[in-house]
Amino acid sequence: MSKRFMNLTGALLSLVLVMAMSVAAFAQDIEGTYNVAAASPELGTINFVLVLKKENGKWTGEIKDSPIPQTVTSVTVEGDSITIVTDAGGTPVNIKGKFAGGNVSGDWTAGDAKGTWKGEKAGASTAAAPSAGNGVPAGIEGTYDFKIVADGQGEFVMTLIIKNEGGKLVTSVENGGDLNVTSIEVKEGDVTNLTATYQGNGPIPLNGKRTGSDMGGKWEFSGFSGSWEAKKKK
Image (cartoon, rainbow, N blue to C red):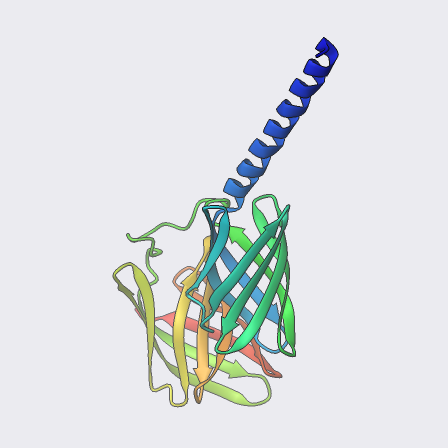
């Protein structure tokens, strides 16, 4: 066996080893928890948490804190591309995306509905807002004068109550009638997203921001749109 052949074989083995190490490192970079925002004209914006893991060479996923319950049935990762299939109450949802800079974005379809999505990997962004403990932002708990305005339709006025239960923020309303606020999500940059239902229909995303002790924003759902605000009671 010639020295040249041995050198070539060694170089090829080194290349294979480097490629294998690169693939493993990329897989480790993909694994983790992502804060996802999925948007469509029909549903507005829906926020949830996506957890990706690779165990024994197989990718798995889990969706948490989604206003629309979803079960991940398969996850396929090829290079920088990912395909996720979920079951949303019997409706298959196909989610496709690409990774870039530690985050992921792409398109999704569910029956006749379709839209876009993006996921920001937890820990990849700047520091979070000051916390009151257990990850709950300081000063957000309390009772608010809450109003939702539907453009051209009227407004709903009620009392919104936000509590910290075991490190998780929960919501309830008083005098809301057919309108209910079912959840709240607080993210970096004072982003505050509520989820509502009307006569049991929804989810209706109420996306907004906190300014001091108050919060507010815009909403859009099923052809209707408007604004919302919550002023904290002293």
